[in-house]
Image 1: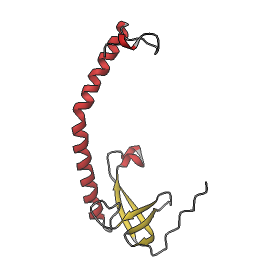
Image 2: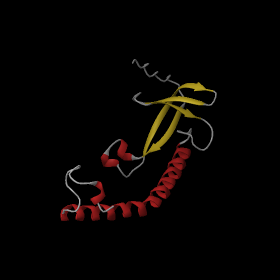
Image 3: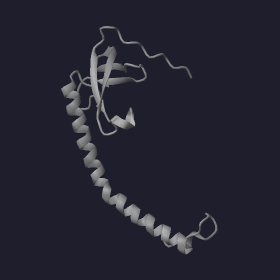
Length: 132
């Protein structure tokens, strides 16, 4: 399979901005948002094709609605990043009780394996003997 080369942005290309988590770029900046400049390589009726300064990323970004990928100002990009992190926190906070329950189940499973109730190797006992 051949891939088309990523087009280079024109020298006067429109610039869009996006903040991402720092850990994607450098573990030293893991807790700091990183601003990425994206250059428009092609305009479409409903968005843009953008690339980063290294031309590694080549992505279509809509230019309408609340879920845009990149923004024309740094302030809009910062507000979008804040909104994404708020939403992520709400989603992950809702999952904490489930994870705690799975952790308790894992602790019980380890105790059963140590006690010899659950076999260490699969297929050495009948599934009906496993207590859950």
